Length: 521
Image (tube, rainbow, N blue to C red; front, side):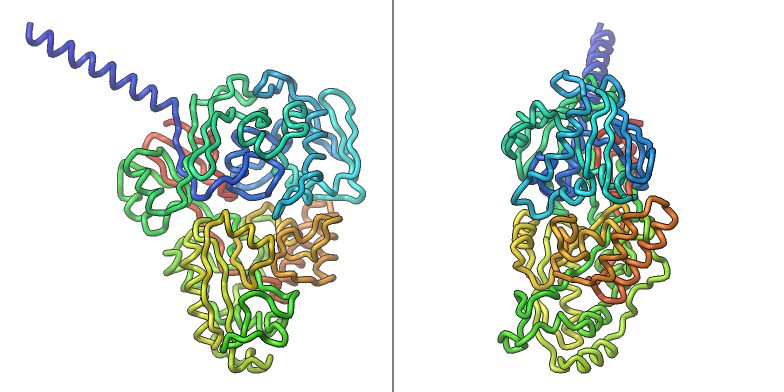
């Protein structure tokens, strides 16, 4: 009798464990490394926001784990160099049950142009489209004034919203879910800025049934907190694993890691447009008659003063590669002939003297402290290196939510930025082209750099639909930006995900973390 009772208890316990396991298998919790500021998919082209938004919304074109275009909710063809015809998948349902049509597509491609107050929106991505023709319910033709080879990459980041739900909608309408009606794999259940985003499965998702009934993205910008959440079981996976924790996690059989070289280049924007940019002063703290940062010799000297290999080895603990290009080696348009600036402090001092700044000057380096891997430590190390050649430098670190607003207001003379994109010409268009809102150029050109020759190369590259020719021109543009020190590249990130054993994830060069690509083993 006692034996049967014991067996019954064991059986009950097994059932309970099974039910717990089944419940946990239906929910996925992921720790994000940066805050999500809005669920409006057309307000700001910032990766943390897109990470959350792409759970709710789809795009015409997707990119695979190596950032190459693949069909999303549409396939395409190019009848001529100025025309792109997209055919929607039939039966794609919005979260409210309505079927996706080309009217929703046209509305979504026009809406970014009406957005105001963004520090860097999606206008650049849709501006090359000069005409939209709805052929029928499932076919739309987009026309460009000139050939635009980058249209597929641009459209991969322009998410499609419901015209019915989003007409007249505000950012708050999206954040509260009223307008956040997409065709993506998950429905928005709750958005709590600075804390979490909760989703439930879209049962009619066109991509098939997914393993997770519920998904929670927890905002955990502190590296130690994010790792602790994984170790304690609070989350099932984390992105941007801190370099200091990788060895410990790798040794544990309870976890698995996935890594790849990111598309992201970490670099310094250097203000070249103002005589008195913020934080650039004499060593006595007095304003200078003219900014030394305007002189390419000074910018080159700063570049020579930076020991990129030391940053990669020590600050990044081996999880970075010294950078020279605007994009990393796996990205379209990377020029392998452009090599990282050699560490040469004596050469830096010589250039400073030639430029008339032999006695040096002082600068402030602005940086986020919760966006990129070891971002504040990188900035502090750069400041120490500049000090060794006579440039006194201090670091002003702040949360990303504050940082982007200040950058938009041009509060920085030198600012750290990480930029990841699918092609070199696209990156240069945003971060180095002369600011031109009508053309959508220079939306993130914080330094005010301007070179008509570079602008021309960018335009040529983007206007070329032949991939080989386009890449050759993009490489020439990358080389010119490097030669002119349009910005100061530091390193390419190696990005790491950690997850509990029993999960798999394919590491993505674009660094995106998507619940729908996590699979149970």
